[in-house]
Amino acid sequence: QLQLVQSGGGLVQPGGSLRLSCAVSGSGIEYAYIGWFRQAPGGDREEVSCLSADGERIMYADSVKDRFAISREEDKRTVYLQMNNLRPEDTGAYYCAASRGRGCLRLTRGEVYNFWGQGTQVIVSL
Image 1 (tube, rainbow, N blue to C red):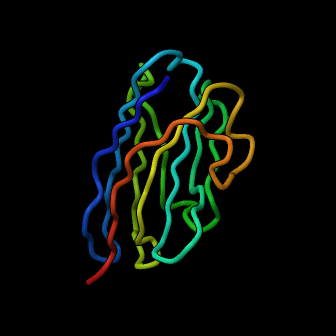
Image 2 (cartoon, rainbow, N blue to C red):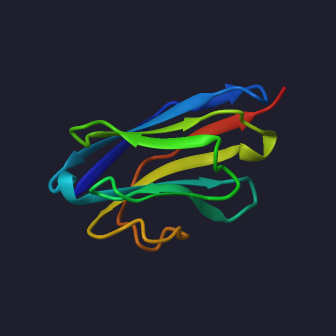
């Protein structure tokens, strides 16, 4: 089992920055790949970024490329999503997710992830 606890989020003006954190605990952390998802009000869940367990694969959705950055502490117990130059369309509930194995091969709708954080709200507005 993996447990994921999120922190960060909140209200920010367009052009601002936020950093989301996802604390990962449990067994087999070293084999966990991580994804960050968001779901806009009334919209579908989309994966905006993922990071493979070995750190060699990172993917970003086109909508966030060059603005968001995923990273992880060396002990793999905390994963971050740094979000810069935020836009109103970035508003939504953000979730981190994890699973073990060879992941981050493509961006998904979440079907490959077994463990989820509780979610945090990001609102980008004046």
